[in-house]
Amino acid sequence: MNSQQIFEQIIRKQSFLCIGLDSDVNKIPQHLSKQKNSLFEFNKQIIDATAKYCVSYKPNLAFYEVCGESGLQQLAMTVEYLKGNYPEIFVIADAKRGDISNTSKMYAQAFFEKMNFDAITLSPYMGEDTAKPFFSFDGKWIILLALTSNASACDFQLLKTETGKMIYEEIIERSRNWGNVDNTMYVAGATKAEMLEKIRKIIPQHFLLIPGIGAQGGNLEDVAKYGMNDKCGIIVNSSRAIIYAYDSKNFATEACKKAKEMQQEMAALLSERII
Image (cartoon, rainbow, N blue to C red; front, side):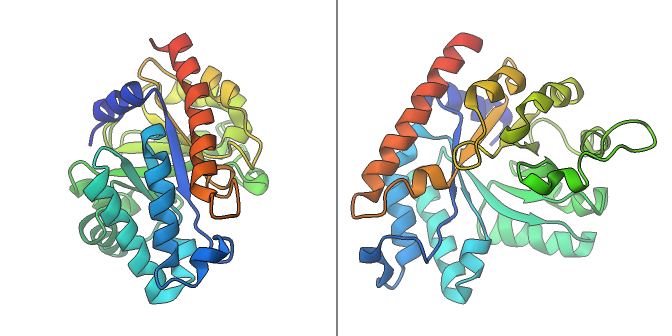
């Protein structure tokens, strides 16, 4: 999948929504919790209810790893279900990996060959050789952490270097030529929307994965204002605000309503800025 194909799906669905499958075994509705594959069943119902309103899903690995072998099996089942039933959807492993090259090679094989994810989030802290092994897989993407949405991101990301630039700016500038616009995205948090304008000056055509909408308080209109380019260029993630919209047997119906609300907001922003 390349950037043009992602853009075409955005235009077709009038949405740039990514739904984070942060599926917490302690939060799924009680009527599912006693099932053998409760995480998968929860994901399946969320996916079937919301797929027409989003262009991407992003399972967070921690919520599956905490359940051991069963959790990883259900993660694999989730990806397989998406690939079999919604092949146009862009599936991101929110894994935040980052290690020396021989280890990264194993991660790349695990996530791209064995589990068939389209993309993986990576930490750039250890430099270019942590990313290189992932580029050997055609049609797959890396998503580098640059400016995250959490409160303590300022501990390091906003520190100034000797050049006068902030660390997140240095990360983007130094890594933008590791790959290209068809295999590299950057994480840029919605809670720091005004900084997207700076990021766009460095990477005008790369896609940005933007978390922080919904429970974390990010504003969708500001994100579009500062982050969109002429090919949309943004994928906005919402997790808890959608998948935990309602804790009952009607959870999927309520998730559908929340996803549709966001899609309609996105359609209006696309109409103003792209179409």
